[in-house]
Image 1 (cartoon, rainbow, N blue to C red):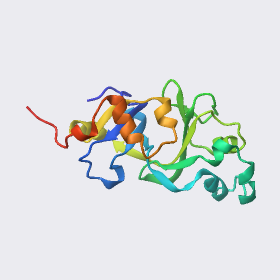
Image 2 (tube, rainbow, N blue to C red):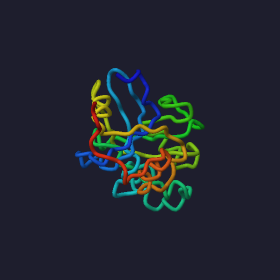
Image 3 (cartoon, one colour):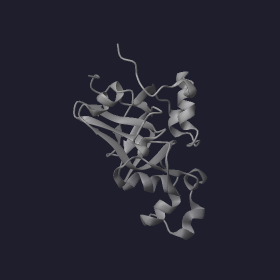
Image 4 (cartoon, one colour):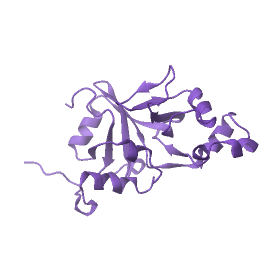
Length: 193
């Protein structure tokens, strides 16, 4: 069994043999890992709309106010964080911005799931680095450990650069490259002695 919290702040990469289409080539940032279960966000799958449209849907801004948003807010993308609670929003962000509801995930990354961070981002007063996800990926107690042992996932140390950069579609290959793994050499089955 993996130590309590071992996966916090790590990336999980789906192996080529992943049979669940929702996680094919997924890069997942793990926020919480304990004996009770695991929670993370798919960070390389996009929603069919951008952040300003979400702000309009939530009534934070009007369509006419899009032009007033800071440039990085206008270009912010919304990720498909996972299949659990797909309508619930979460913001992973740098620790230079905190509110009472912010939860530290690692030394320099926090998670906030309240509207105040969306207001701050729309006003240009939010964190330096942020990503918005709708939904999350979750596993019951012992489930992720079994999947890792079954060769469904690779574990990789995360970096803020890889977490927050805008190249969403190339993220899977870049994380593999960071690990020194050639995707062509990945095998679907693990060997057992």
